[in-house]
Image 1: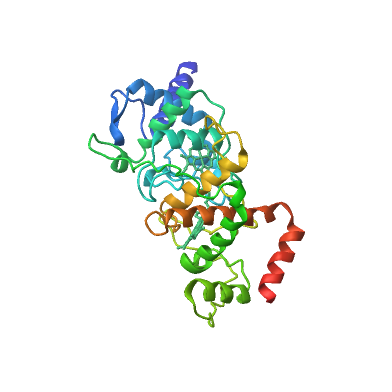
Image 2: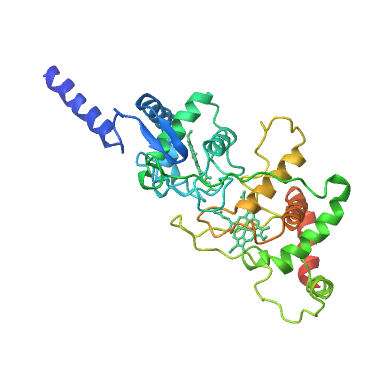
Length: 311
Ligand code: HEC
Ligand code: HEC
């Protein structure tokens, strides 16, 4: 009788084990960017994944873990091989370095927390999650996106107010970020900006100008463009370990600059590289950073938004 029990137990355990996407790895794999992971690294990565990540990202890597219910945004579906916060032009594959940063520092305002794991564990789990999307990642010839880097900030703290003013003009007139996000200027101000930048009056205004608009995405759900005076920005202010940079404001501005340059993969937010000039991207980064100051004071925020929408 006892024998039958342990026999059943073995069957049960092995079905549980083999029902995971990959059982044990016996061979290494080549991934995009010339990265080679050994079978040992992949097996170790899987152990890390089952311990720390599976509850949200799921056994199949599809983002349907037991704790995923009700989460918005939902955990990433790794089977798609699409990443939002790589420092590469939206849609391209991110570098291990960036995935490392995301896993070690988490994504602000989401249940994707900072994972306190060794460098090796992070490296191995990164390689393991790639195996959920073999079409995107596997093969010797596969390429990663070109890594985007922070350029020299043409403004700096002494020209902050100039940058914020310029950023407001670029945001509303040149880039029209309010077509997805919302506007943060009154009609009167927009008219003034239009006269200054385009030398013409602005007479027609989009009636949805002060609303944020849900967007279609490639992730299988609609994505919400953040209201910068309300939401936390997931990929901004997370470069805590960046050597030589201690100033949190500098880190946030650099992260914002990179996000605007890169966009958010598969999530409607476009890359502004080669669309806006570099100094315009910096100006918008300062402007968004300014808007974020309202997140700390809801009373002040309400006053600010009311005064805009009334005038
Ligand atoms: C409590 C739930 C939860 C756990 C546990 C969790 N994550 Fe996440 N993870 C999320 C959510 C939610 C997102 C999506 C955030 C978004 O779309 O803005 C995410 C996104 C990601 C992304 C995508 C980043 C990008 O640029 O698109 C990676 C990579 C990731 N997680 C890796 C991991 C790893 C590795 C672990 C385990 C060490 C882990 N996560 C554990 C909830 C979780
Ligand atoms: C076509 C629609 C669209 C346009 C245009 C657009 N965005 Fe976005 N943006 C989005 C969406 C959608 C998200 C959220 C993606 C998600 O949650 O998956 C987003 C996210 C962001 C984020 C947050 C990233 C994070 O870390 O959480 C920033 C910052 C941002 N946008 C700034 C801008 C600025 C500034 C402009 C104009 C220069 C702009 N966006 C234009 C759709 C857009």
